[in-house]
Image 1 (cartoon, helix red, strand yellow):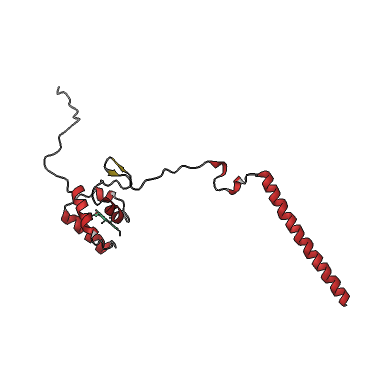
Image 2: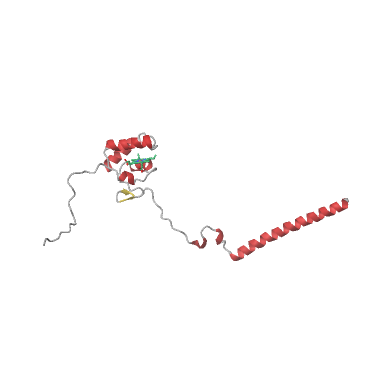
Length: 156
Ligand code: HEC
């Protein structure tokens, strides 16, 4: 009985060793085939064929013709304070399209603080308001703009 058991154990051990060896050989074979088909392992790379998509780097601070390119805001004192506090929730376009006097800019900021979760701006509030009134004051409405490009037609 004992002998039979130890014979069984031996068979089991040999079987295990063989299976391990087969598995090992199998893995090596798969790897070899893989290397033969794709020697430079390009299929493992994210960008097969080496065609790189060139993403144009946006320089966050670039000023072109007096305009902060990334936001479209006028380059002036306080610009970065405005960019850092006022372009998080909406685009700067909403600022550019709105021209107001000091009082109304302050009121708009108060409104956002009360209803839109705009944070306390601390000492930056004055910098921001000054930037806004200087660069985005109300449009002067007075004399209408001169007409240009008029298509005159002859009376018959
Ligand atoms: C916490 C988010 C948040 C921040 C930061 C923020 N705003 Fe706003 N703001 C809003 C929301 C929300 C609206 C409403 C947007 C809409 O109507 O589509 C808004 C609207 C506006 C408007 C339009 C107001 C109107 O009457 O239509 C202006 C101008 C404006 N924001 C300027 C600013 C300025 C200047 C700053 C920097 C001090 C700023 N925002 C920062 C959330 C924010």
